[in-house]
Length: 244
Ligand code: C5P
Image (tube, rainbow, N blue to C red; front, side, top):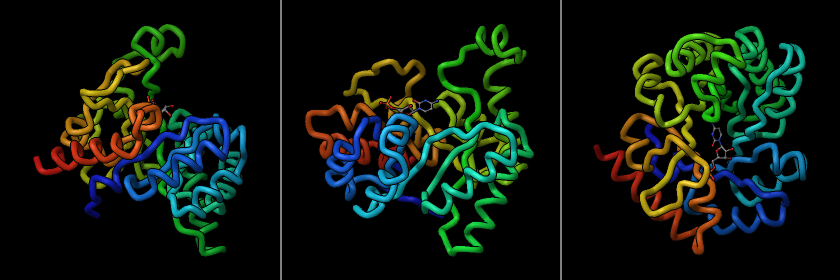
């Protein structure tokens, strides 16, 4: 499926209230593809915020990073699917049985209720984890990239549609997992925006060129003096990357 630059842009709605989210969605709806609701907004406002975004015409990536025993994740996956989200995620560290359960539950829900099939995406090694933390605290030896690819292959084998990964791992993942595997990439910063607390950043053009399917961008757009103009500029940069 060939996606346009606009369809590939996911805006992180890292705000506390439905009101703030609605302002951003109504301003940006024509400029971007998807709105990401994470644990901040979801825990504050609950499923109603998803319905409000959808009623404004927005697609929702529900970034709740499910991680529990297979049965519990399966039940939660059914509920999220019923909400009609475009995409949701689970931790690959939960193992293949847990991931398969999420996919099975979504498929069942789609069959039973005619809800659209969401993309189920795996979270691999969080970008806040460095080599020392991975080894000494989490107890996984080997390189970060190696582990990300290993978990991505496990996710693919368990029926997931793709993974979230930092810009640094896009190329290795694209090579290992093939052209149709979805790679969702945060840590994107245009040259004109502040880096904030992101460490391993890439520009929108570079990330798309490297093979990212979707880019997650928050503060460079939501914190800009003119979010609509910022989104437009980022989409233009992504279009440049898609030409290469
Ligand atoms: O504002 P900024 O562009 O840094 O927002 C990036 C979004 O992507 C945030 O919602 C953040 O939680 C999310 N994210 C991330 N790194 C990950 C996974 C998610 O930055 N590894």
